[in-house]
Amino acid sequence: MRSLSAGLSRMSLLVGLCAGAGVSVSACAEDPEREGTAATFQASASAGLASGEGSEGSEESEGSGDSETSEGTSDSATGTSGASASAGTSGSGEPTTTTEPTTAGGSSTGGSSGSGDVLPPAIACSFQSLTYGSGLFELDVDKGSKETLSFLIPGLPAPELVTEATLHFRGYDIDHPGEEGDVHMNGGAAIPLPANAGWDNQEHALQLDILGETVAGDNSAVFTAGTFSGGTFYRIGDVRIEAMAQVEECPEPPESMGEEVILDYHQAVFTKRHNWVDRCDFNGGYAYTAKSDEHIPADCEGLYAPDGTRQGKAIFTFEDLAPATYEIGVRSRHTENRNPKGALVIVDGESKRIKQNDDKDFVEDIWGAKALSGTIEVIIDSTQEDASDSVIHVRVTPI
Ligand SMILES: [Ca+2]
Ligand SMILES: [Ca+2]
Image (cartoon, rainbow, N blue to C red; front, side, top):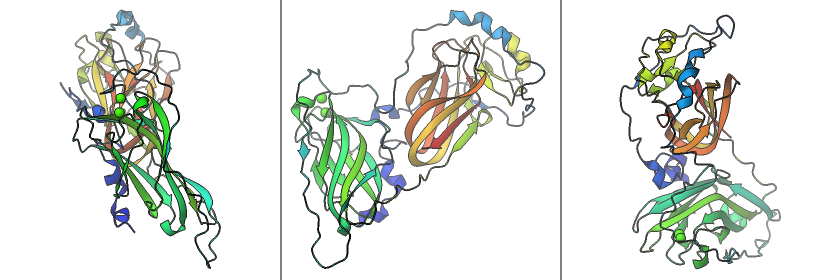
């Protein structure tokens, strides 16, 4: 069948825009300020393991200056996964009532594939993309852009066993009929997105008939930009293939290829290292931003020399992640004088806040889940407020 199928490696499929699997174009900007004195904490400072006993390692003095936290330039938490809120080229969203998602290309009622063989009757099987359940991904580009959103759907049976196949997805702002863009299955012919002029700034469940476009194993669905003069803006997510297949039972979804990776704070790169304290000697160690001289003796490396801003970044680089949806956890030491807005944690360009200002002490918080692929950064960005954030490790686990 289609020669592309086997050759499309999972990596190349999903590296569509920047590092991530279908990450929004607008989120691909380089970190603007890898400024200042970047440094890693020495892993050799491993005194710890005191596991709690003895000198209660409180940051008692930390509290004093904290209440004057600034706010203002918050780039506040951008809620949930997926698409960033840049509404792009979309116009004013007058709420129309056109809610029926058209089923472009109805499903054939076919079943029996001819004669003779002892093939089992066709049964309904569902095949999810690797990023299914991870929210919507955004394409927001000028006319003529070659940027795409790519989705990998593994596990399909041989096409001769497939009697019906539809591509299902959620689409947002699919509102320029004939000009919104196309879908290409496995490098095949363009299938126009089923756009509706009434769907400005609206989300709909959509489906396309792709019988004859599937291949055995890994399938790719690539969404391209359209020809609308104002550029292309839409979001796509929850891509899956529903098929009727003459198989005894539906294939099990493949094991995730990803592996859990935990990076300790000693493996992070710190900007403005002089504003970070490495408390390696207490309970296995942790890092936090501070600004008072009282913490100078607490820093294991003697590199804490506060400039009064209490600002810096801890940058964790995860290399060569297999494409998958990962849960992201951030372990830290909570104290009641941490940043009242929560620590700003940026995962591959997507920002969320994690509250650390309670008495839970040493704890791992769940940032959420995100489709990741390749080499990505997780940044504890303590540059937005004059407030203390903490980190011990960052964990990514395929789910
Ligand atoms: Ca629009
Ligand atoms: Ca649109």
